[in-house]
Amino acid sequence: MRTTLTIDDDVAYDLKKAQEDNPAKSFKVIVNEALRFGLRPKKNPRKKNEFKLITYPIGLRKDLNLDNIEELLDIIEGPNRK
Image (cartoon, rainbow, N blue to C red; front, top):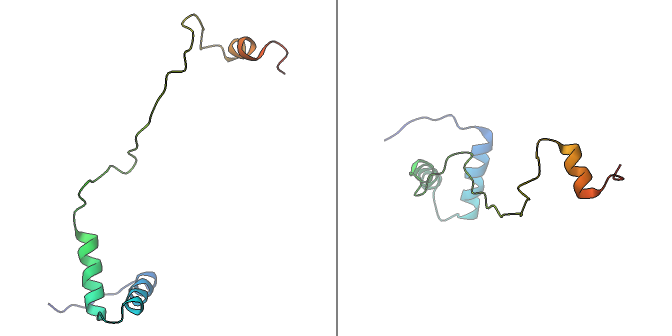
């Protein structure tokens, strides 16, 4: 199929660079490979902001009130911390 595309300058630069790196391939082949790669569904699609968080127990005492930061800092660092 023949079609006319307007390619952004940065994309055209990358395509020309790919062709320079592999002169045995025609520009048409380079463009088709790039399109196929970009359109191919990912095998393991991840959500945009998905990440894995590894947590470790730090052994906080159950009797500590975590609502009062000043009190916690006094307990941890001592009353002369300032």
